Length: 265
Image (tube, rainbow, N blue to C red):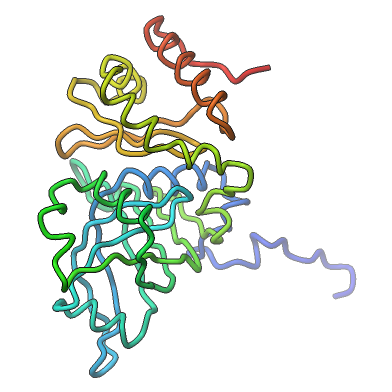
């Protein structure tokens, strides 16, 4: 027995058990973050306050600058009463599509929900869900964040991975200027650069016009046209407004030329 080779970590792990994202043979972190940013509604699972039964409901979702999921919930809803009693919850992000629904990627984020009165949370949610402005200020509604404890990604057939909170969310250290300037940049792009927004969306396979920028962060742009969404990553992360401007100009030029933008040397 002493001379037998010890099994590897992969051999010790059960065949159906997902790999950590850092060991997955595909870009699990990139796919998970894409789902976080591009899905606008999903299933919220809470714990029934009366008897502990799992309770799932449909909610609309946005994200904070670092990717933290945001929700606008009514205290008259069962899921809100459940969260007030026990903040543990999970959100399912799924894009869906044609064919077998299980062939499409989906992400479950588990964590703890908390109410938030932060102006940024309200601003980012309503930018993603403008129709919610009709009822967002009703006294029975409130904004919630979901602080992730883990992510469980199924990227399609034979593509599964688990993610830590640090892998799900962006490290915002040093990016304070970008987030402080976000709203001004969003308003400027929507007012003066609709052509560039259409180029950005087309560069990730989402053609057409009518695209508006709903938010940006150190890794990319969040666009929306009607009910369609597009997540457009930068060639490399940005940490200040000067880098953001240069990156957006380069991305538009590359899209016009039909090329992929390149990171700066």
